[in-house]
Length: 124
Image (tube, rainbow, N blue to C red):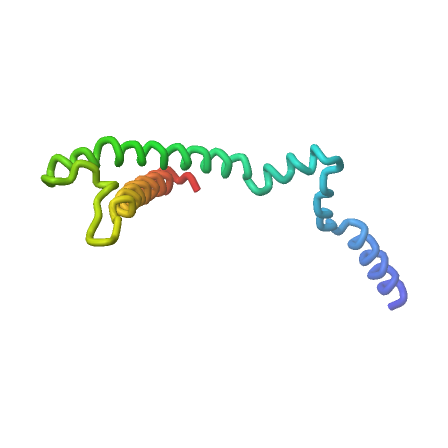
């Protein structure tokens, strides 16, 4: 039995030597520039910045569309209203609110369409 125990102990030592140890977590990059690059890649800040800029200009484009085209069409369709942004109801000037509401609805619809296309193309 003594011989069997020695063999068993030797096998246990071999097993511990051959065991695959879990990899250590990656060390954070050293230096400010490397930390900054790691931050950009980890949190996808560049993609967020691009999306913000595109969204900003999309909003500007939609505002121009609403103010220059749609409000003119509404002015032609409703007699007596030449500029919807100056429309008032009693003591309330609701024209600017209506313009902002129309702009919001159009932007929200365009964002909805963009998300729908991105999901269809599996861009998450």
